[in-house]
Image 1 (cartoon, helix red, strand yellow):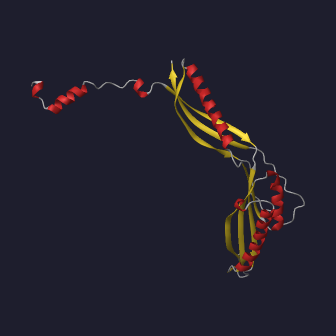
Image 2 (cartoon, one colour):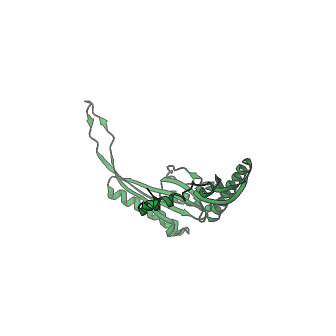
Image 3 (cartoon, one colour):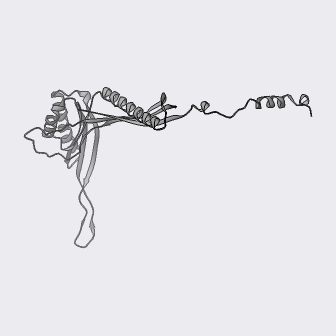
Length: 243
């Protein structure tokens, strides 16, 4: 059969197939090096977040709520009076729970039915203290005014932007140093940056574990050690490998 007698679509297929060539390495972007880098920066905290809870018990729910509310109101008023802004005080939990007597056995061996004996009310707040030196005094004042649970402290920074920028720069330098070392070992050198991505960033603040607070008034401010916060950034870097 002559080509001239073929269907037009068949001729098109033959012509197109003549231009199909295997993919070359250059078309795939050429050789590259992919590495990861990490950068950290440690800075002193300038802010603390306190977790404080007022817990009260009474025979009735109304009584427990009334005594709890009076204590928490006194705590909040003292906080604002000490210079803490209202926006830095936030309620984080509130609960009313019944309390029952313990299960006991009668002389005949049968279990005595548990009885309702009262109610427990908890009201918790998070307080931002923007003056680190005042944290001990705020804790002392809180306990004297009625806080009797909680005590969690998280040290933070109001604006960690500069610390993160430095950590990011350190991460890129770490990745580039690795890429140069690999390129040299392979007998080449680092070319242009092809891709860069950031995987994670954040802080690892030092924490004071939660603990139950004593009801007794303290004679001195609570001793506090703020330490340093570690800000960490990790990246992924892809660079061209030149011979």
